[in-house]
Amino acid sequence: MRDTDLFQLALGLSSPWSVTRSAFAVEESRLDLYVDFAQGSRFACAECGREGCAVHDTRDETWRHLDFFQHRTLLHARVPRAICPECGVHKVATPWARAGSGFTLLFEAFMLTLAKAMPIANAARLLGEHDTRLWRIVEHYVWRAVERLDLSDVRRIAADETSARRGHDYISLFVDMARRKVVYVADGKDAATVKAFADFLEAHGGKREAITDASIDMGAAFEAGIKENFPNAEITFDKFHVIKLANEAVDQVRREEARNNFQIKGRRYIFLKNVDHLTQEEKEALSELEAQNLDTTQAMQIRMNLQRLFKMDSKAARRFLDRWCVWVEVCDLGPMKKLARTVMAKADGILRSIATGLSNGVLEAINGNVQAAKRKAKGYRTKRNLKAIVYLIAGDVLANSPT
Ligand SMILES: [Zn+2]
Image 1 (cartoon, rainbow, N blue to C red):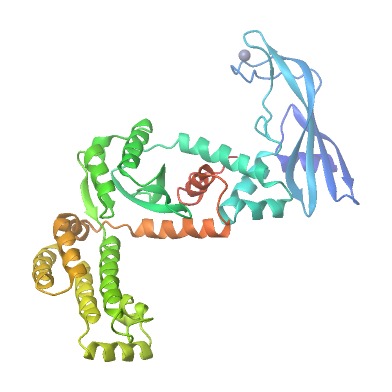
Image 2 (cartoon, rainbow, N blue to C red; image 1 turned 30 degrees about the vertical axis):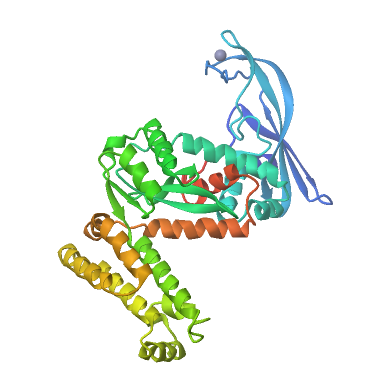
């Protein structure tokens, strides 16, 4: 078998295309493959698809292909422009690369695989390309895939915000609970993001009325947005957010008390961790503090009790929650009473999370992945870049590779 036949097979080329020549430059560590079409070949019109158009002229083009072992590999071809009786003269489509890309489809697919696993800058270094070229490929495929998302089967959603950059810059992530993937990324974290999602959903085959459940945090923004845009959605306040709120209340009690009690200072973590996760030394320190009958330990008891709620069945949970609220109301701790009032006001949504088992657990994990990618990439130049990466890694929009 000739080397050109081997390369032709490896590239998967078929008539009228063939590899006519190869040149290996050892000192430059480069392999050049020349692809050409048979004399007299006719091509389909790239505009209307009409077959059998004659060649008008050709242009030389070069693409980077997957490395041949450690050697950079370039594909060269004269690309014909065909004359279509309907559309005039147009460049024909090449089976190994999309129009306007300096890379073959296989190279792009490889690049996208790298982009899912590491920051673009690292992938660029590894491939010896400028990162702006890689960003262009990522953006092309991600936005095309987002445009084609089919959301007609979405019924249960979860939403949460995540920080986009330092300061108060946020994006909101909307997850389809059935596929456990991000299906929409919005700017900001207010009620308007929910409307933006509802519009996007309907532009992609979904229906506002078809959404039956929405799992969100207890902030007013998402709740208002859901009520306004998804008339049939039952709201679920998931346990992560309830516990987070409870932790914040405990911490507030601790801070107030720490002003007058030096033993509490610097021991923040003891009160926030689950007792099971404390070291022996921490446990001893905690029981010593407990013996002092501190506000902070009382607040912690209240939080731990609330946590038990999420292990109950929904009937027991309703009774327990009522008793819990009565108990907290008679304590002397402002932040905990405020917590109890919030929990009472949102009780239906909290209890629904127990009944349906819906939680933002998926979103918590996704959030973690997004923030980890952001850290590794040392941030993104634009919010659009960040969104593209979210769709790529947390939306998995390129689960089906482009080739
Ligand atoms: Zn045509």
